[in-house]
Length: 312
Ligand SMILES: [Zn+2]
Image (cartoon, rainbow, N blue to C red; front, side, top):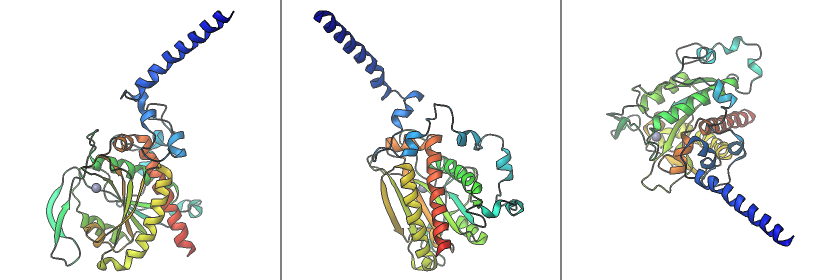
């Protein structure tokens, strides 16, 4: 009897060790089934949202299925969404006024573009110091994906979320093939008189260990009129973004050298959403699922900012 029990135990041990083997290979297997293993955030424990959200290989989430992809033919939502060209028609809808962002205009500026423009432009109004009009940004060290592609993907998802909350959203660009300088982007938003501009970027570094997200805010003397409000918005958006994504919080960065800030007359912040030169964050930002999480975090931040601003 004892010998039979021992054999049974050995058999179980052998079986379980066999079953673990495929699990181990999953972690290095780049196939879609491995996405779930790669997904958890590199630093903090993965956020609830990230853990619960289905991987891109699994059945697509409702949001992903509904959100119009830039390549696909425009869906009904996309056709109806107010762009700078189209006049917003939200006022006509009876329920619109009860939405939390009713009457709020948000500017989204997905950073960079497919081709850089090196023509100089003043770093601040009236300044003799210049910077190039717009660069093509960083790119994923592992994926090779350019920054301008992923920030536009997040921007389009965020636009949909904000519009669902009643906001009027203006985007500086909806495709990668544009030529709009950083000063022109700021001026366009000034003319529209938006409540807040959110610039969407990803970071890059020669150090592949560098990871996490920071929020840039203006701090130049020439932006004195918007510095405090931008800082307040930046703090609130960053908190919500970090909570949603579970990424390492690199905090607020005060910048006086950015032409896209210095020419702004409306509150403006810039999210460096992650490091594309970090292997894990490069993989994350290339998934629809994580892009959606980024958009949800930033949308929540804007909701919190507007709610607190209106309370004051
Ligand atoms: Zn950038």
